[in-house]
Image (cartoon, rainbow, N blue to C red):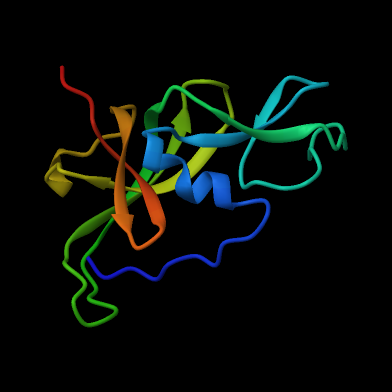
Length: 133
């Protein structure tokens, strides 16, 4: 699948490059013990600056998904699944991603998934695949 890569900056570099070490790095606030995404220099819950990337389990559940059949750009393989997953580490910690290595018609709401990474240049894209039953 053809992909546009993100521009790396001080807040998001850990997120986009954590896959190099097999880690999904999500920002965490020390004072209120809250995970949040996307990364930011200030906690959106308590406004603390004591935030930074920490590894999460990489486990999640599919909350919603769409099977896309439109070939938006040359080289884009269709169909593909865009999903909102909830990370197991905190209720309400949602993440938009692709579900891969699974036939689109096998994806279901509440399906357990785990992170996998696709390296393109200096970016490790966090994607999710179905957990083995």
